Length: 162
Image (cartoon, rainbow, N blue to C red):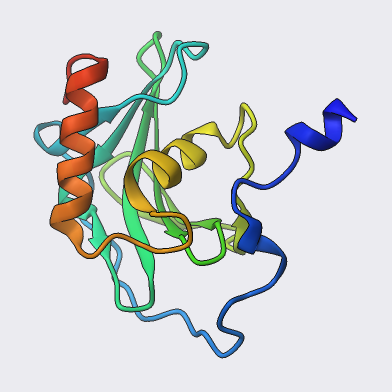
């Protein structure tokens, strides 16, 4: 029973698309993230990693997708960079590309929409959706609203950036 409770998707809308005619809009690959534009946000006290969003890459699109560059830094100094999107209406996320040394992007092999499940692996997407990007199944009004949420929450959890 506990396994069922912990594997329930974050949003009830995952089981049916509220707009079966929805089509994802066009997007462009962002520039490589720069340390100066990174905003740290809280994911879990259980993780030693630092989680950062590239503020310059953040976009709230007309198709209802919030797109962003995520940077995950380990205590040992390794970084994982991905260009991702979250669709609040369905509680789903996808990776568009992974960052490579030199600022280049490599298209993701599995770029399908995945349900946001609040598990250890997906906790970062659940935190972004619940705390910063979505009002339930509704995306934020605009980019400035997301930035305001990120900046005000970051100040509660510790230093942001770098």
